[in-house]
Length: 549
Image (cartoon, rainbow, N blue to C red; front, side, top):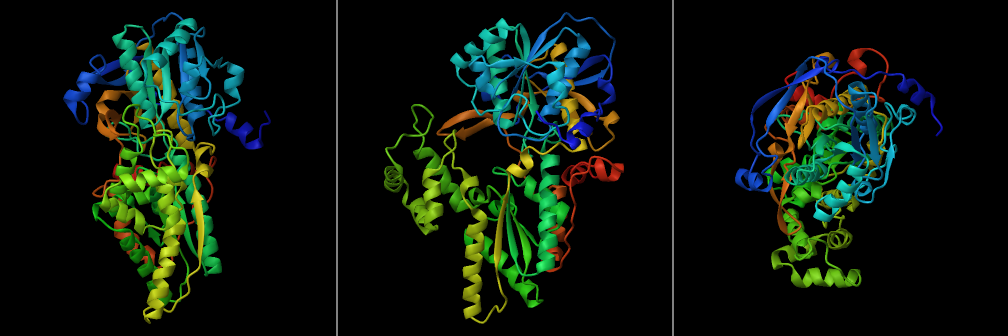
């Protein structure tokens, strides 16, 4: 593998650890916990891992531990810092006993089921410290939810003498981790399962998890690109840039990027849903800003759009919910099989309710077709494939032309389109993510050595210097509730959406009129790895505002 000058320099960076993890630890238990919703149902489904206490680590006394082996899985989409979670876990278990071994399962949970693995050696680990991507062992989206998968998994775990399995993933992956921990506990197999909170979307957070790893780096990467576009926008002064950003289920990335770059318009899906705005309402809002800027001679600007926006428009959300139901086979929970696209479209049109048929029929043909056809492995609409940025700019252009005919608008409107997704998923982690992820992995080793299972590794107080961070663990069941998924009620970790009464959104809402009218652009520049602390080691503006910093 060829190594760049940046990678060589970054390899020398030693991530910072909370003070509690810098030596032996003792686990301090809090009160018993309960799930965030559907307590009786979750308790019945997870009798062996429900109600466990929150754990906080404090400095403890050294003790000798027999050698043990650990397995690790990267699950779901990439997020900056995954390699540092693994390096923290590696260093953590080696500090407990140099004979301990770490095995990585290849290409995600499927590697566990298919017995596809490698041992992570010191030489291999050193190639990936402080680097982006998940390429050390790859990732995958196989769902661990069936008994035969669990039994295939225990075969290889026993063969390799693995005491604990660490699953690094988002809300769905950690839901699977919780299910697996419960199964192995119920069977008394003696294998622990620990989760680590990953997703650049930022929707895996709660009172215990301050942020999911990768969010900081991804937002800084996107904000750099947006700033570059805004600099060009302000130079050419002739284009409106419609920029779609990752974030299907929540608008955290769009909001954070808006806080960092101060665009003319940023749409927040959760607000649109709360206000019950129609697609035309959204288009009218954008068109009014465009027209107002044109009156000042500014026929240019930037619009930030969350990837999942279309799902939050109430009428379309109801349409998608029914599509997800009728296109899922209730006997298997998987997508229905059709001979071809036309058969699937005809099935939808003949099955869907009249109200939702009318909504579907009102959409541009290409968007309607995408809603009917494109599904992800879980049977859901693939909203990332819907070119919302082009849909909105086309509809804004049509509305402005109508206003022009009515003498209400005499500006010019020309649009450019962008979608930033993959550009941020595998970026080299920021100092914050490098430190945070390393701490998450190291902390997971302490949860293992304290015989915990069904826990999420958590690091808190991360707006403070790293020495003051708080390390511990939270029962995954504490974050769960029952939701409707693919035609069935299932236990899942509750996603965290943008809170409209939260400090980050309130700050944005208080400034957006000024940003819409004036050129208040901020150009953050690239992610900084060296330099003053106030430049290099800052957390996201979202996290600082949430903690009143």
